[in-house]
Image (spheres, rainbow, N blue to C red):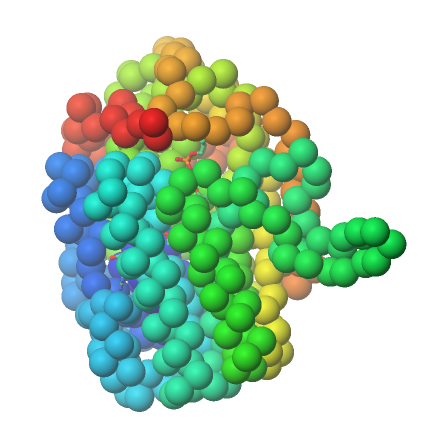
Length: 382
Ligand code: NAD
Ligand code: USQ
């Protein structure tokens, strides 16, 4: 299958591109490399040193003999996007290429506007490119579990059957996102659903939970194939941040009570979920939604797990309950359905102490790269 991985230079996209290439697909990466520029803007970095995209794909070719084509450009430039579609003629378009940090989207008006225009218009361009140039192409779009928020009822996979005044309908699940970033994903979902309905596009929206880890079998083949690992208060996500904090003897930054619960998955499952979606395409006109996570934890539970493994490794840290910089429910019900990917063959890598230990040891090897001032949260929702 010919697959474009948009955002293929990023944390989820790079290992996915390698995995799909290893599985025998003809893969091309599309990326405008903006994430590397944002590191400069934030005076931050990845814990792991990352090679340039050019070096990465050259090393992949050297190690495996497999070629990954690259298209450097922006989804918001429609002329560029149409050239990519005309040259590569994709069967599937895996869309990771968005600004994905909730705190970044909450810095100020400029960052909120950038996030929503980059994400919503980029995605709309992809929908038009599929309609005009590759109507059979399957859009595999990364959405997020945070689109649903934390309702006081079970979270279903995309749709919920509602009975109202004696009548029933299967309707899109209500969305209550918690940042301008998460809202951009809701706007994307609506645009995709509408495009499926009017143009007969086939699409799968992968509502992914928080991803942890960094290695996959493919990224481990050579240090030039390293994946990035974010730890700062803007792009670092909960578990990866706690592990990085442990590596530098920093108390774990639990926001508020830490009772807030989120769905999680290992990066090794991200790559497999995308493969499952690609190999089982949605029908023409179908807007399919999969909840892409394997387990859920409260933030405090995660901190406790990291604290325990760190202790076994001789690192004695504790959790500090910082004033929560976000506006979010801390005490809430959480029960989310995730059966569709498992029914199609996903075998989850669950969060064991060994998984935490492996990430911790990798981070300890690189700990001199961690910029201490970037660890505490600096962006407030208010
Ligand atoms: P990332 O920031 O590491 O990677 C995104 C990549 O997209 C970067 O390489 C960036 O340069 C590129 N990009 C951004 N805007 C672009 C544009 N307009 N044109 C071309 N390239 C562009 O993010 P990630 O963690 O790999 O996340 C990938 C996707 O998965 C995002 O859509 C995100 O919302 C979603 N997601 C991520 C997580 C997570 O925990 N990391 C969880 C759920 C969903
Ligand atoms: N949190 C802490 N301490 C920290 C960092 C985070 O307590 O040091 C808490 C936050 O308050 C929040 C939870 O952990 O309640 C998750 O925060 P996060 O930064 O790990 O994740 P989030 O902002 O939700 O965003 C990440 C990715 C985003 C993706 C989302 C999936 O950056 O791209 O969409 O996870 S989900 O959360 O399911 O929407």
